[in-house]
Amino acid sequence: MKNQIVKLNIEVTAFLDSLNHPLRNEIEQLRVYILSANNELNENVKWNGPNYHLDNEDRITMKIQPPKNIQLIFHRGAKKQTQPKNRLIDDHSKLLVWKEKDRAIATFTNMSEINNSETELFEIVNEWIKEAKIVTNR
Image (cartoon, rainbow, N blue to C red; front, side):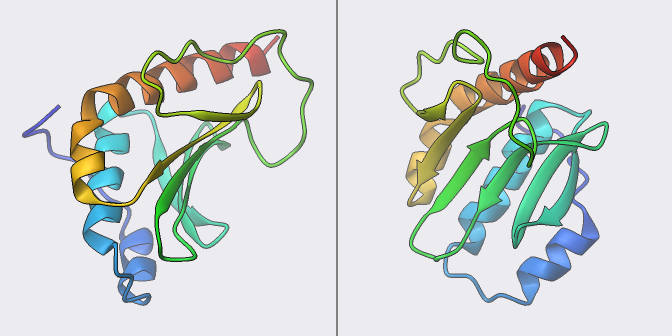
């Protein structure tokens, strides 16, 4: 995962440049981790933050306001969908706080938390993308 070249979306970068966000370095690190985890993901701006989608289906949205922390919202899109019987993924990392069976949030307040979660984030992103696609296509 390290040393991999990641292509960041220039519109997302320009959007972030306009914000002067105090956690900009942390946001950039999360962008790199998410895009490194799954090269099928595309990045855009949605809901005033970086958003990651696969085949135009939103899967991960970064909540960056208010600027006290950064939250990664793992979801299956903007529309309410029928809930799966169980949580979408098995999360052994304890990073995710579950809001519904198909929506969870990981919260970070500093670079150390992000860097210490690199391996878990990589696994969560990949598992989420895989399972969200399966559950949505059922």
